[in-house]
Amino acid sequence: MNKKTKLGFFSSFGLVALLLALAIGCCTLLFWNDRTEWPKFPSDAQTPVGVQAASSSTPEIVAALDRDFGWRIGDVLPVTVYMKQKPGTVIDMHSIALAGDFELAGAPDIFELTKADGSKVYRVKLKLQSFSVAPQLDLKANVSYRVLASNEDVTVDLPTIAPYTSKTWDGRKLIQEGKLVILHGLHGWITLAYILGGLIGFSFFWRLCRKFYNLLPVAVKRLLGPSRFIKARRQFDAVWAKMEAGDRSRENYVALARIIRRLYLIETKTTLEAKYWYLYGRNGPSEIADMLMECDKVIYLNRTLTDEEHYRIKTIFDSLVQPYHQLAKPVDEDEDS
Image (cartoon, rainbow, N blue to C red; front, top):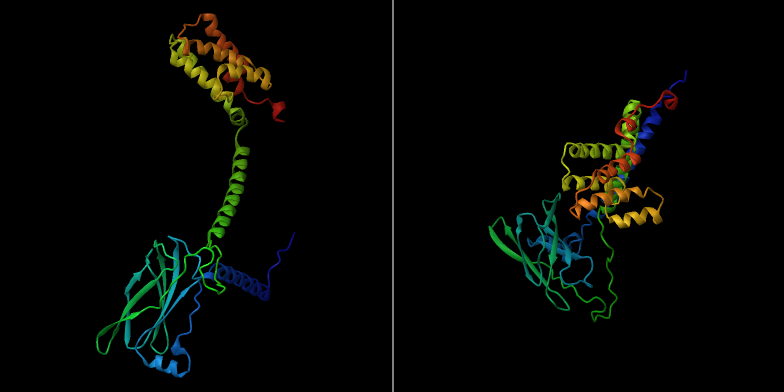
């Protein structure tokens, strides 16, 4: 009897730590591009300019664009605006107004972070779009803030953004650097998840179907084996029963032709093409075309078949497709073993 090996405390702890580190690493990799790199505001520096900026109630605003060149008409520019709200003031994030060549292409994405000194830092992701035809586009925007002590509203301008639309050289004698990579987002990971899920689902249901099939009786397996011929046999017998009852209408011959064509996969071939197809193109019973020829006399020539021509259809079909009771007969004990 085999003994089950149990993990010790340190082994279990190491396994949990490894799984946790793997989960953190995967999440970091997935959302690495969504991290926020906060800029340095003037008030963050311990310089005379920084001290003056810190003492002022005017918000500090920094705008960032991945690249300022190579944009085309109708492109969506992802502009990120960082705002530092001073204590005693409130920035109205709904008062952002645009002027110039751009317009908003979607709702802004706003994230705020409260600092220990009472100030707040906002990250506003804007999607801008322009259809102006010009070598250089111009974005002008402003936002309002309120001084709580005096209840006064003040409007401050955002930094000017002027990207170039030239695809090649925009006239500046300076090498421009910027991100030119295609941002696929999570599409690659989502596609990989779909593929893995599909493979897992296929494997699971394939095993389930095989297990279910093994539980079926032998007689049912015989029915499921040549299902295409059994179905054709049933349909043929049903139509033929109508004909034996005296209904030899054109619609019944059309139904017979459809059954024959569907059974032997020749729906797209004419009767003459099917004849030559089986005579010269591949090995197969050319009598299939003979059945279709008899049906075509009624379908296309509006003829009334003689009894000999009519029963020739069934004779040929019976020689190619066994009667239903022979197709569905149970397997002998010798064959089963």
